[in-house]
Length: 125
Image (cartoon, rainbow, N blue to C red):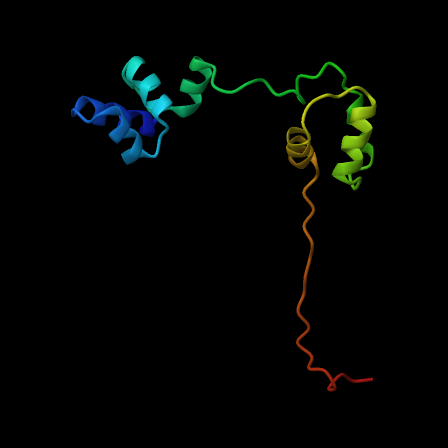
């Protein structure tokens, strides 16, 4: 929302749309779209995205075929194997979305490391 506000302020200050695009790093198409929208009233990104319906629905989470959840019984199954099995059940979405979902649902395991303070060659037998 702050980027939209920045574009809005620069346009109100009299800068051209091409110059605003260059200064802000926003595409010219986005600058033109922002110029036609209403003013920024708040900076709550989550609320604004929900109101403007930014982004599309997740094809993974909203897929009617929930048979892909088999992998939860074998959490160490490779993501590529999960993708292969899910596609066998009829999943037509992208692999990146599925990999992101698997990563978010996969149990986080902490690996424990320890440092031995014994110098090599000085260990007692």
